[in-house]
Every structure is written in structure tokens, then in C-alpha cells.
Image (cartoon, rainbow, N blue to C red; front, side, top):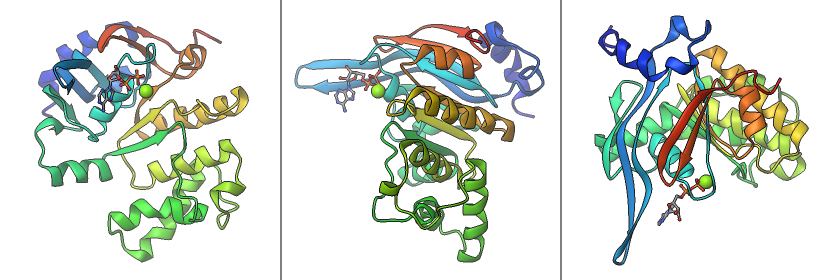
Amino acid sequence: MKFLSLFPRIIDGCHSQIDTKLVPLLVPAIQLDHISRYYTMGASSVRAVDDLSLVIAQNEFLALLGSSGSGKSTLLNLIGGLDRPTSGSIVSNGQNIATLSSLDLARYRRNTVGMIFQSFNLLTRMTLEENVELPLRLAEVDRAERSGRVGEALERVRLTHRLGHHPAELSGGEQQRVAIARALVNRPKILLADEPTGNLDSTTGEAILTLLQEQTKYGMTIVMVTHERPLAEKFADRLAIMGDGKLLSTSAAKGLAQ
Ligand code: ADP
Ligand code: MG
């Protein structure tokens, strides 16, 4: 139990959001320790993420809010291993991803995290089923196992019909469901969502967040960037507010809007 020695720190970091659901499961999924990401452009430097520390517990649903340009997407990309910090460490699922080799980082992206985006990012020429299967092909999962795994992921998003349809034949909400299934198909531990309801009407957005929230039952940790504070308050466990690359505050969320 290598996490045991970290417990006092974790509990301290989450003191505002301890509830009965989290107490027995309070192990860290993601530990951000003084991370920064600077972009240098000519003589000037943009501090997109600026000395930010945060612990996200396993099974937690964290919503990341803040004005445009405050560094939310940069932070999410760092956690997802799409980008590396200029300094600081990111311990995710037990390994410091800031120091992984490119090959190991690619493996981390493939096996440990799933990502969804505002624009769904489905491949338009592929069917729904082929889109969801793609990560399994990239991970070289046996053909014999793939269809069962695709079925399992589609069941999680309640979209087991219309398997042969193409993205253009689906509604926005259905397309985001496919994108969620594609993110889940490799059975990741962490789900990262960058404004997943940004292109959806409010009823569809709530349905998508209900689905995301359900995934924490399967042990998933979720970090979601959103502009929509009421939705974050209704569905997330905790809100983290960013400003100018820094973490301004965190607070318990669930139920505040109900
Ligand atoms: P948010 O998602 O909160 O809107 P971002 O993380 O996209 O914010 O951006 C944070 C800051 O970093 C902004 O000032 C943005 O212009 C800058 N930035 C983001 N990506 C890059 C990049 N690839 N090169 C240079 N600057 C960038
Ligand atoms: Mg963004």
C-alpha cells in the first residue's frame, strides 16, 4: 500500500469535499505538484499554467472552471499526456508522467486516459461501431475480443442500436455518446472532458453529464472543463477555479444546484 504514506496529505488537500462516497476511496488518482507550462513566443512568455498544485482523488468528478484563456485546456492536456509541463511533477495512476519516455507516454495516453472534446472529433467516414473500435485496433487488442469490448462501451452510453450509421446521421448528443464510448473502450482509469456540453442544448448536456457521472461508479476519475457552472455544481463532486494559469480555489459542489 504505497499510497498509505500519502494519506495525511491527500486528506488535507481534499478537506472541503469529504463525503461518505469518497471517504473509503480517498486515494489519489492524480497529483499535480507545482506544475507550470510556459509557451515562449519570441521574447515573450505566456504562463498558461503557473505553479499549480492539486490532488484529485480516485473516483472523484472534478469540474474545472475559469475564464477563457485561464489555462484549463492546457492543464487538461498535461494530465492527458498530450503535452509536458515546463516544470513540476504529475503523478497519475502511480507514475510521474512528466518524466516518461515518449513511448511510455503514448502507452499512458492509450491505456490510462480517455478524452472527449466539445467537437466530438469522430471520424466521419467510419461507422459508429468502427469509431468506437479504433482505439482497440491501435492498442492491438485481439480481433476476437474487440466486438465484446465495443458492445460493453456502447452499453455504458446506452447506444447499442445504429451501429452501422455514420456520425453525420446522428444527433449531437448521440455523437458525444459515441465519443464517450470511444474514450471508455480501452477501460481507462481517468476520463478527461474539455467542454463536453459546449455544442449541446441544455437537456442533452444534462443527459451527457448524467452519463459521465455514472462512470465514477466503475472507479473512473473524471476531470471536466466547463463554462457552465450550474451543470458543474449539479453533477461534479468538486469545483476547481482557474485564473491566469493558477488555481484560485476549490469547493465542494454536488447538489448545490438541486
Ligand atoms: P482555456 O482552455 O482556459 O481557455 P488555454 O489553456 O487554451 O485556456 O490557454 C491558456 C493560455 O495559453 C492562453 O493565453 C493561450 O493563448 C495560451 N496558449 C495555449 N496554447 C498555446 C500554444 N500552443 N502556444 C502559445 N500559447 C498558447
Ligand atoms: Mg479551453
